[in-house]
Length: 496
Image (cartoon, rainbow, N blue to C red; front, side):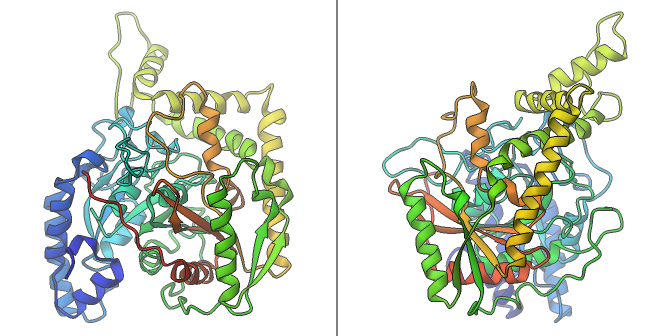
């Protein structure tokens, strides 16, 4: 048997039920792998004591309950954006230093109730604002992949970079992520794993530190599509604590993986053929479409005309909501509080606390958001962006109404880039990494990234499938067919 930490969730589940392995054994293998992977900086708050206790409880449950949930005994990592009771939950920001929640986020609670084992908290971009995991107060997370013959450390993507790195390096069997503009799908593509952003409202946002409330959505990051289906099942469901959580039953996502997509229509949007797109990504996209056609699907060219306005609209709406959400961090109630000079008042307390507690990217986005919401610019920017968002959603609605079952696109405009290579002087270059993913968040749709192949430098590239709202099962089945056809089994060579 291979190392227990390299098992998939489905493999581990089956072995646990056959009593061929225990949760404690798998957990120990993961904890040992985490201890040896300090160079990746993926886990930022380790919880071995909690992991041991939960693994023992899972083993007892598996012995006494033949109908224990599929996630019972499975070791996972939790993104630092999810509040976990008694465990630091900082959203990778200095301003939340020392914050120990007295409560558990709904998603992490559901995973706990399903019997999964929490190994610790995972690195991320500060407040989930970033595409490279370079804005974290913990330092950069590092991609376990490297270019052939090149030791340059690469980004694992962002904001769920720690989650992506941990899963790709077999430090855990699965991890939670959040996706506001591509923060699950882009890092999944950069690290050769699967990541699904479900329909907005499928997973509760309660207890998850907010970035942009109308865009944020939790989802799983796993080694395979089947694992994503299993983990998403445990994370999903209505929650009375979250008014945006949908009162819609959760189907059996794993049962939907029939591998049959005969007669399905796959849309190929012409607007995603970006100028300057690498030939390797163009070829992978064409190959993916051909594979789906071979599986019995019909490939249809479609148009999503408002795609070109998605990035500008996103980078008005997301910072606007962030500036509102982050106003609560004032140095009064919890987290960091700046030291005041004699004579300083509450205004100086707010100013100094935020200047010390927020990183540059968070400050930049808060300032953009405050600007577009200000009286003189609200209609010119924010209201206009909201109208564009409606038009983007209408594009997708019309495509699905015409009979399209799923839409195939690239996941990212490039493979992983080197840490520090995207010049801080031009943040717009970094924002362009989200060009294929933000439309899905603006429209509230489900989207999944599937590893598709390696570029000429030996780095993973991903394809994205976009599905109909609330039809994650159907979307995952398309992804399952694509995954099997692509046959991606590459793993990073261990250097850490």
